[in-house]
Length: 330
Image (cartoon, rainbow, N blue to C red; front, side, top):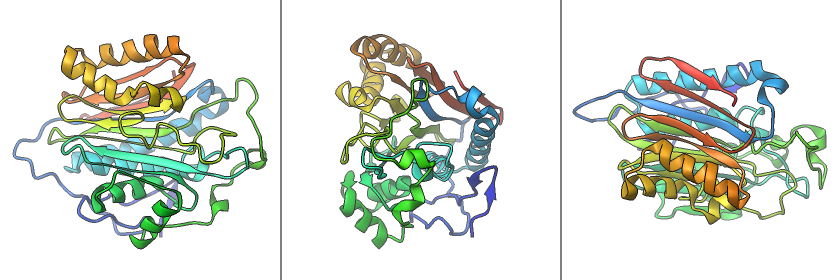
């Protein structure tokens, strides 16, 4: 059984050779690299007009510190970047504070359709699921698509059937029901209550390998069948050992149109820009002028972490090899 602590489920570490069910015994797959280095991780809990500090600062801080503590332990033991990304996102999906997994918000019909993706910067392999309604942890299904199929993206019933056959936990749709008002068809948040709430992680492990992942419930009152940037490789998620690992959150339609996650890594490779230069130019200038709100978290191949956003707030946290955890709300 999974025990609960500070609102988060204590989950097992994930192996890359076999995707385990959420209640399996903890394991760490160590990286067989010859020369180990420092590591870095950055995780986000959404961006938007939501005032995280005013609403429940202590709970959000505990959640982020708990996740980063587990990620640090994993990486310190030699765990892979892909494993650390999946572990972090499962923890956030299990916490109803966030708009992913259990805390996913409803569409215009009062139903929940969830998206997630993950990418390995070592091989450029990636996996994603979209518009799923019964997968407890969509990031685990995305991981399975990456590791156990020739595909990148599976959607709706096809993704759920795939997950079921690989013993990934399914739940009844009402598992995702949150506050009563969120379940009402057509519910829209009041001004100042909006948040994009997507969760994600970007990691550099001790072997110098990068990975990133993203998971979301979308935005309130979205049309049924709407798919945003989170499960789209190159838009909401991208990782490449030659540059950086990126996870995005925000108005997904703009992140798709501008291929935000991939574009940042391309600017780094082809223009020689640093991670902050590439990200800030796109997010704070070009995307903002186009009307797109949100941001990204990233870590580059040298372990530099960065968060870039044009919204009021973006909850994110970092940890490096020294174990120091920093949580920021804005």
